[in-house]
Image (cartoon, rainbow, N blue to C red; front, top):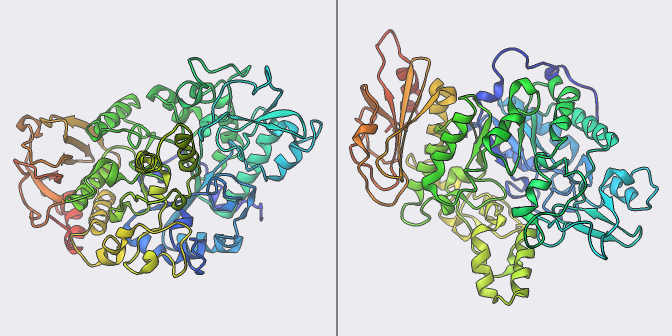
Length: 583
């Protein structure tokens, strides 16, 4: 790989507004996005073939889940070569072409940075496990056992102990995830320097940043204490012992000093076990660590009535400054319509309402592929249809506990990560337009009705509503970075809030329920408001805000400005009207 830094990225971010404050990020799961060579696996040339679609959608940045060489024990999050593209996805030249073609369409590209762990097939680990005296031994966490068992009681995220015994060297190695994903030892300066040089190589090629996988897990608790409480620790008890530990901020500040600040990029941390104060420590500009952290309170919430409350809490804690990446869905979570919306009668309307929420609350929005179509969860009839290692391990554990097959599948399917990993639904054709071969994981049978081709020319489709929302966001200073004020809704299912900036005020009304409701009149902000976008057809571009909200109705209103030439309101109205999506 060419390690020369190009001039485009050697721009410091000390002055001016960062570009990423105005972007909307679209996550691509490459294995499931578009297959170009009929092997049933999505690839980089397939993504290139769909760049015009992504440009027409109106997003600004593409985040690719891992495309690096990997044995695929955890679908690419077990990397065996940081400098190579997995052959399933193409070649390094394919990736360079993707960067060029994306740039030609004003699209940026960020990569998944997975540096908490590697694959056990990475050359570093192969050397490390060869002997206790190998120079790479200290690249990973190796410890002798305790009382005939692992060094402590930590559990893996994927079930079972977080330690694996190695017969050759007679010690255990740590793996917070699969046993084939040994954790790197970030306390070793040599590990950090290897990672930093790798990051420079990708950024020098023209990559626009990184989504950083479980980045706040890099530092582990000193002394390897047992997790408190009964059982083996795991997520509930063990999490704090490998998250936000002493040393993590030193690592990130060093990474920033040696790599990040030398490039004009976006960095977003996947950080778990955070509260707002802990999160601020990662993203305060003066600390020079990361740009954003994911607001995971939202996608991991179980009650949609609490969604806006999480946004309010974090926004207030950040003092109104943008430090959060807001998402409702990703490659690790169920489809948003199935989790928060109505997958039946009101599927399309609830998909639009949730989109309105995501693209109008404060923060940098992250969309996941297929959201813009209203894709739903899948329910496979057999465990052999699933590919997710977490699902397979949990299924085996339930059977071992005496659970029946049907009950196990019913309990696990709604939360399976494979819900988000079924192929992108481009058309009603066999293979959903994703492939002309046999897909690596089966398509959702409802692709015959829910697909991009069917929605492309339908002005009332979920796809075209997303386009309208994204256009509105681009034209609205209030939605991109304005103040945020929660207003009285009258019921928990009704969200009413106002955004304001640069002489523009936007008022959003959402009914996230299957019943018609009357919002609290006291929650209407003063002024003369008109509707600029809504998810019910035929509402009219100049309609007054409704006194009653239909099931899953979403309304976006703007306060009229004094007319001095063409106001900001008219500037936004024009492109919406031309697209035929006003009202």
